[in-house]
Image (cartoon, rainbow, N blue to C red; front, side, top):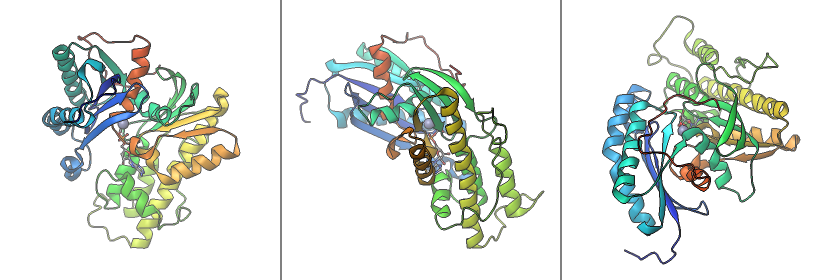
Length: 348
Ligand code: KG4
Ligand code: ZN
């Protein structure tokens, strides 16, 4: 094994909030020495959604091998390890406890402090990791499988909720419409690929909650129902029996994607106007969507808004974005070893 001569300080970050088991070793300059992600996609595919009990059991099996691989790949000095970081909110309870228990055990075994992090703040911090420019304050937009929320971010660890989805998250809507189109779970990236050959103007799907000029909230469940009616008609259930022509499938995918993108772009601009902020940071799995990235870029360019999109590999769940733990560590914000999980979303 090569000997690390660098004497660099580092942290070990653990992520297990939903269905990815991940760990990363991150240096104090926020560069990532090693990052490992064990995905559970294959386990949940036949259920067309994440099954919490299966996710928790899979985390349990994978967490130690994943951490072990990171330690081997990073090959850093244990004396230089400054803390163990873990996302303990928000997420699936059974998944969160596995990561937190592993982190606590390592803290005890190696006599290191614990730093707990918010998974949503970590998604946004992926933008800060990609630049040396200070991005705060900013409007933070998280678009993932579980969240579609806008924040006024005063600092990496201090924020206020401006608005969010009142039903499905954007990623959840992508995944459910993808199932209707016969695509594998999780369907976001598959749907985006299908949309490339479709016409985004073919179907005029609703843009929910855009009419109320005050609202910074989102709603995607009516849009999803509208797609369903377009494909099968009201009252019918069975998508397996559908014989939708390839052209129509692509047009539905493109038109649905465009409706989601329109809602997200418009609400983000509204949040920027409301707060007077000039910087927009975007993270979460759906931030990997090329159409959303392109259209946000165009809209922000026109208005001289500084847009920072999380690098694509750090959009979907990973532990590298646990680099946010350095911000807490530098502020002396450690957690006691009796800290618990917080499955629900914090508002501020
Ligand atoms: O952030 P993430 O990995 O997990 C949560 O914290 O929820 O986001 C996963 C979500 C899934 O719903 C997935 O379908 C969606 O992100 N996603 C995409 C794309 N890549 C992943 N949605 C649209 N377009 C994509 N290219
Ligand atoms: Zn996430």
